[in-house]
Length: 71
Image 1 (tube, rainbow, N blue to C red):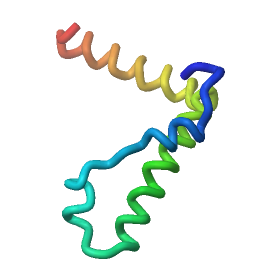
Image 2: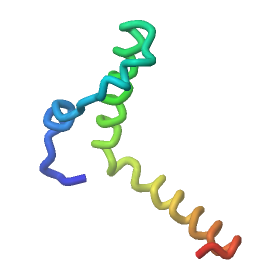
Image 3: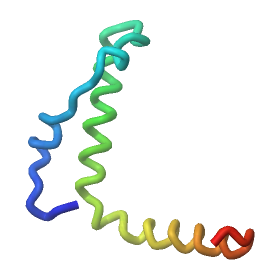
Image 4: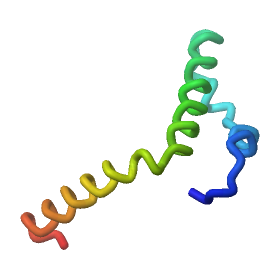
């Protein structure tokens, strides 16, 4: 992620289609889903904290590809 991004700009650009709301039975459920989306965006802004896990995951898939001859 770029170092000069603005989290509010990301939040403001989130737009959901009407299909997103179609299966929602209550307003609270809709509100919770939107809050989850915003929380995910906020977690992704701290990507530096996730670098360690990225390396582990990439290593796992590299070994798996070599093991099964997929690479």
